[in-house]
Structures are given as structure tokens and as C-alpha cells.
Length: 348
Image (cartoon, rainbow, N blue to C red; front, side, top):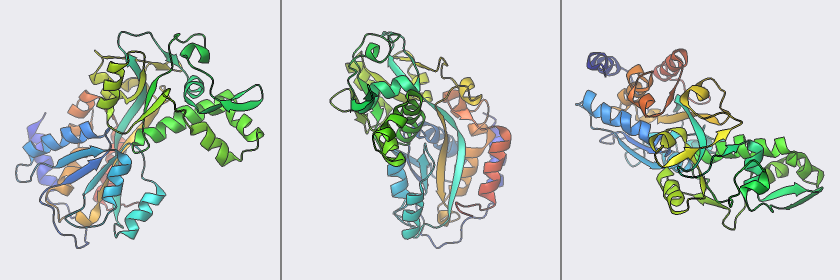
């Protein structure tokens, strides 16, 4: 890491003006949210503590995107967090909840990309999946012979003869995780459409919203289990059941390749390269949200954001990229920096 460049960054960001709302000061930057974003935020926070010794090291906690945004939207002041990490964009309902609690100036910061992967025990068989296969394995109901029926598939080979003759046992993120939303949209919903199930649901009398809900409803009874904890819990479940498959962020998989074997999606192996080119179909941007009322009030908050977006922290060759982050193109990162410096907020 280039300490001279980082020292220059420290000087530059120290002059930045903060928000104008009257917030009382936390003693240090408080961050919570996405378990996918957690390791990146921890890397930045630890380096921030070294480069900016005049500020306390930010406190970074997990809990999931939804939980982090709920904390973020509790209000303005010393008992509320300053930054919410998210592996999905903030929802309109969350923006309204923030506004209702007095959080009206929010900066959305996109800092990179990540892939969502399926992975199983490293000693197990290979999985070559498509969204259609995922839907047929995990959906609560599927069309069969012109009727909508409870999912009858018990093994992966029931779904497609090319897949292992292995019981369907899958661990997916619960709804408190931003990863779940991407999983639903890019795998379940896409697979539902590809298989013709969406049309079959509508032909059975459902309206479009009802059909989409049916597409994204997952089966229970042990075939599919929802994990509220972080990826380490999913890994532990797979370690306990070698035939299971789980949903992870790409970076987590890459840090655990000795324990996990990744599946292809549409014959594409997930990697930073295939995500950056758009070839791998299940990827998503990563965000954090900043409470502008706390800028200039909470020590080091402006500097933390600028530091996070610096080339040294999230550009090519940075420690977050070494960990697994797919970096923003330089122009896009410059735009994020400019938006933050110029006070661009959600809805402005």
C-alpha cells in the first residue's frame, strides 16, 4: 500500500464539508448491515485506523442488508448508526421509513460488484446449473402436465439427467439478506420464465404479481432451508451434510476453496473476470448508505467514505480486490466520489 498517497488522501478529505443537520456526535463511525459487504468494510476500517490515527477506528457489524438499513433508518443522533452496508439497493419503503424518522439526506455509494454462487462440498460431484434447473429444484410449486403441483423432485437427477443423483438439500439466504433478493430475481424468477412456469401459473388463473410470487416461493420440508446467519453458518451446514449445496458470495467462496466446489451457471464459472465482463449471469452491485446529517459531526465519517472509495482501497490491486471484490471501472468510481463530495442524495 502506498502510504504517501494515502497520507495525501487523508489531508484532502480532512477539508471536506459535512452535512448541516444538527446531529449529536458518536465517538466513532458506526457501520452495520450486509454480511457480503462486511469483510470489505472491515478491511477498509482496519486500514483507516492506521492511515488516520487522529480518528477512532470505525466499528463495523453485520446482521444483513435489511437489518442494517432498519438500524440506519431509526433516526439521527448518537444512538443511531452512520453507515448501512447493503448488497442490494435501498427500497422505496426503506427510504420512506428513514424519512418518517427524520433521516432525509442519504448518500448512496456504489463501490464494486460481487457474484452469487452455488457451492457444495469440495469432495462432491460437479454441478453445472441453469436458472431453470435451480427453479425446478427449489420452487414450492411447478407446472406438470398442464397443472400446478407441489414440487415432486427429490433428487437433482429428477430435475435434469445431467445432474448428480443426489438428494436436493439446499441452504439459501433468508429474507434479511440482500443476497436473497438477487437470488430470487436472477435465479428463481429467471428460471421460472425460462421453464415456461410463469406462463403456466398465469394460465392457471394467477395475475402477474401472483405468478411472480409463486415463482419465488421456495419449498420447505428439508429440501430448502433459509439461513439467517452469515455465510459461515451455511458453510457449517454443508460441512455437516456433504450432499448439500449452498448459496454464497463469490468472495466468501474464493476464501474457502479448500472446503467448497463452485457450480457453473449457464456453463460459466464465476470469477472476478466473468463478472466484470457480464458473462456470469448472477452478479450484483454492492452499496453503502451514508447519513449526511452525521457528516462533519461524527469524527472521521467523511474521511471514511472517501477512503473507502479511494483507488488504494477499492481499485485494482487494492486489498479489497485481493480479497475478492470486483472493482468499479475508474470512471464509475470517480462518479461515485463526485456525487458524494457534491452532496448528491437519493431523490435529488
